[in-house]
Length: 467
Image 1 (cartoon, rainbow, N blue to C red):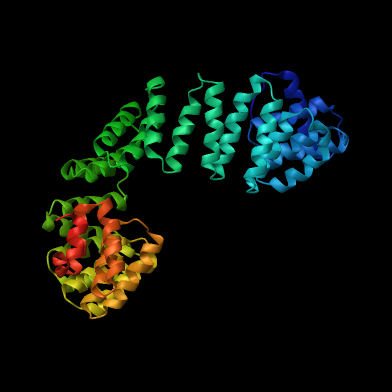
Image 2: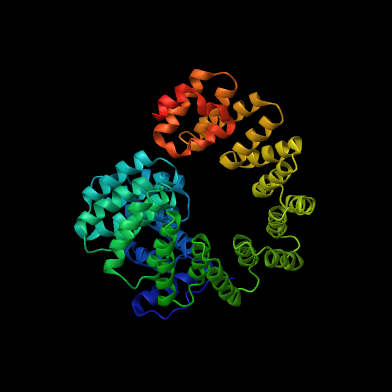
């Protein structure tokens, strides 16, 4: 179907040209426009986000004006926008004469390089573009460079350009927002909070900023401030339903389980089919130790969403907690049948078998959980413990030794490794690991002593602990 422009244009002259061009395109005829007129037509389509039409107009223009460098550059820009960076680079090679003076040439080439994964060359192109640009163009360039780098996942490099932008345009608070966002993406949460707070000082009515900073507060376990931030977001936009859902999550994380249930129910009034919210209500009952309500809730959830694995998992979790191990095994296996990659279900199944002292079965379950998520420290420690109880302490040592290679400086693993080394006769290594762990977190020494209780009497360990 023919795309239509659909709008009445304030610029009647441009309107006339667009209508003439589209009539020409429908008939497959040729109609002459000069370079400037074609650029206006192409820019019209770009402004309407009709990049396919813009590209077709640009190709038609180049057919009529094959030596027009501005049209070739515009075509390269359109190709970048359409996600065809190598084609854009190829077109830019045809306009080399623009390199001396055109910041747009370098900007386009830089963004194409970002899309191709060559951020080093992109950075060189961006810097050249900024050097050639007038001050009135730099603000948009900084934003375009940062956005392209964000989209490619190069958040650290995006931060560099946003920082330069803030120095050049200190009144443009949007760069502060972008910087806060990038700090979040690279895991520098305190810096992210700092810049979101700076943005909110200047723009306190931004529901997006309040929502984003709520997410960061939740990540750093400052749940009270997260709840407060979500409240601001909701007050500014009472249809910000994601903020309602996240507020409930933060309340649950803050152990305000009754309040969380109320807010989850508010969310369910808007999205009654949200099985995730319904699952979290059951988890709140579980955390409150209101096991009867939790069991009833999960059974109702299974009836409503029989193929939802977390519904079966939640019921299995509660049944395990209440000592109904055989029923728990049945429900956890149902969760796994629905989702074989459900690592929490495998881990909890291992815990049930551990409670039953069925060590072979618990090891199988824990190993499944670890295979799905090799960074699950709880599963790694539980599996090592199961091997130990099953008479295979060497396997316990192997698991923890391998784990600490890819999860270094984890205190639980360090103290555990010390305990298993001491139990297997590697005394010097065991003492060394104990000292490393003790120097970081002396309050966690019981992890080692649970593995090898007699170690509390070792003189070497007493000397490390200065007792």
